[in-house]
Length: 70
Image (cartoon, rainbow, N blue to C red; front, side, top):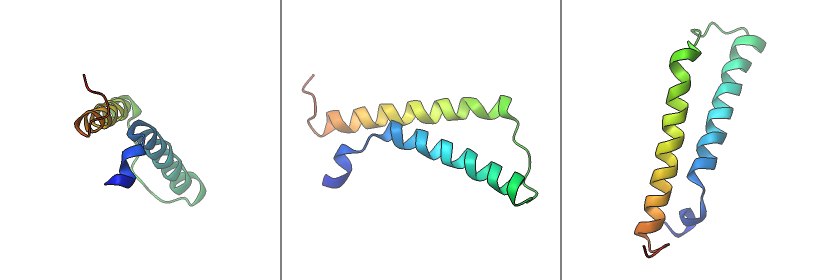
């Protein structure tokens, strides 16, 4: 667990979201695979929720491990 202490969970989640979108478009546009289309009007709030959960859990874990005494 000592190695995980310095990881920015919010940054990792943003990176994973960007990676996932990139892989989706690579598979559909470049390789021509028939992947169901995403309804972005319904999907984008999930990205915001995932980012928020990541930031809150990261701060909670820091506080739990004694990062800030308040």
